[in-house]
Amino acid sequence: MLGILILGLILILVFWKYPIGPRPQIENGAYGAGKKIAVIGFCLFFFVFGIWRHQLTELRIMNNELRKINDLDKKTTLIGIVSTEPDIREKSIKLTIDNIKIETKKGTTAISGKVLVTVNKYPAYKYGDKLKISGKLETPQIFEGFNYRDYLKKDGIYSVMYFPGIEILDRGLGNPLMSNLFSFKNKFKTAAQSLISSPQEGILEALIFGDEENISQEWKDKLNLTGTRHITAVSGMNITIISFLILAFALNLGLWRHQAFYLSIFLIFLYILMVGAPASAIRAGIMGFLLMTAQYFGRLSQAHRAVVFAATFMLFFNPLLLRLDVGFQLSFLAIFGLIYFQPALFDLFKKIPDPKIFPLRTTLSATIAAQILTLPILVYNFGRMPLLSPVANILIVPILAPLTILIFLFGAAGMILWFLGFLFSFPTWLSLTYVTKIIDLSSRIPFISLALQNIHWFWLVISYLILGFIIWRIQEGQRLKFLNPPVRKIFTTG
Image (cartoon, rainbow, N blue to C red; front, top):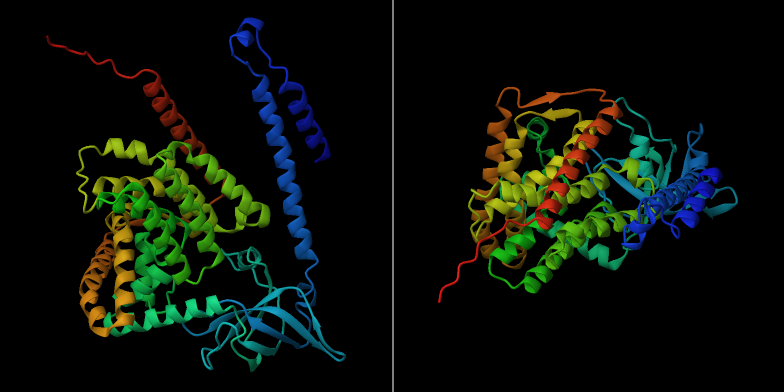
């Protein structure tokens, strides 16, 4: 690594100041290959810096105190606070415990680390509860086809505990803002459950909050089969697409550009708060904010620089996201799909109408553009190659932005006054019924998707090399179009 670092610095220092090329070209402003070689030096420099930062993170994991007492043949007693909203599953609840103290014969000692505790659904535990937990600490397992250990590692969790003995010591010790947000979320769910029937209500909760507890296994299988499971997760791809469509939708309603921009920012901010502001949603919100800012200033083609900078900033704090967080990968790739493919697709779909009330051409081009670059990652991670499922996505994803706004209005109205919620429940139920019908009918189509197991990472490399070449060709075509605009004859009279 030191050798690569020195090589990079030499390339920067030597070739940045003295460009390579024939003297007449240099004098005319053509810098030859000099600065390109210097750029390679910068790439080598930051490559080494990234490896160093990743190794620091791995070293911190190795020195984690709680991790060192995993897999002992005895019970461990911990005292800690529930630091996030409980993750309610079909038969259990998962609690993330932080601010941990370990009980020893000499008393309690503070210890670094977090632990994921799996408990029964009853009695119920809440965010901010202080618990005394007694059980066996274990290292997360690696299952066939799913590395659960890496999945938790990206969130700083290296220890798990299953069905321990628990005693509640205190309540209400969490952040007051987060406590109010989770309370608001629960009231929202209660209003929805009283006015919307299943399976529409389960899809509503999954779409807004990413909670699948009220979706039956039958419907989960249908979502998997049709390639629409991503709509039930608060994923980076969804927030990215929704942020893009909300701004376009607001502009088509007749709002001024700055009004549409601030309204879109507020709605995305409200959405992230409503889902409990998890780290994944915050990261996706940052990406969406950058995308909307680029749209606002009319510089979508230059947005890739800000996106790369934001991604680098996030990876500086948590380099594990790059390889282990699929949501981060999807949000990053979805934005690049919108930047590079959406304008070209918008021109390609010029025969499709784009009315102000529902900008069909804009939503269709944005939906397909985001899915083009995310498809290889989805296939690699979830083992399904959609054959006809893009049809279901094209029919569903364009309505996600207006549907999300409608659900916000429905939930807020239901919490204020039951009758208002009752009125808003009709269009909400009708829209959700459209989504469920598309999923149900699509799941019955033979050969809608192909199951692929044990896909090699080399497949990803080939896919993104091909997509990179397509992007390069699109960029070259746009550059030539800009440099050589069509000649128009000008006729004058008089």
